[in-house]
Image (cartoon, rainbow, N blue to C red; front, side):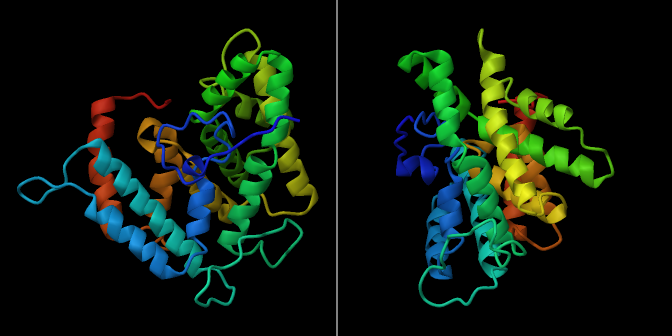
Length: 292
């Protein structure tokens, strides 16, 4: 089995252009935000102050339409999501961080969003990675090439898979039948921009096979994979995991926008307005392209 070293700056999304071959993007971002979601409120408040202080404004006091402001605003939206996850966590809260260990078979963890999201992250992203990495090494047979493929996969591969999974579940929730072969093909299609070359199909098969096995295990364990509650936490996971939402319009459209519009008030009005203002201008500049 390959030994995958993983850097904390990737876990905590400190590098917005993730090209981490140690996790292929499967551990990017979401671990740091999930950890913040079990921290006491004072820790998130301190992070919020630092982010707001880093927002730049013009001479009239308006937001500057620049990259830094887009990224800081997205992080403020993520921080609001972490606040929400803390607020609906039913466990007794004290001065210390809450435990972040959730198990599929622990039914006390499933009904609330924080438990559900962490279970999905562990089962669909974290646990399959070593096997995916080994499959890439075996298929390629060249360490340098394998490393490049893992870096390519890190560039939006996993958040693309999450968006595809969100769309599949939404179709099922609307009454469309699930055909396993078609569903797996939809997940493979989501990787088309991230895995190329003569063995691209084999690589996509290898990744989707591990992800599909994880989904099957969840269903076998009677995890509630379908339904609006699961779609909501998958959207959070996609927003947490995406290395650069401004470069991945599908995550913005299919994950962040619905979360900002959720009636639970997952993102504060101030931050919703800020994100919408900055990103409306950004997408108008970028044009109609939806893929990174």
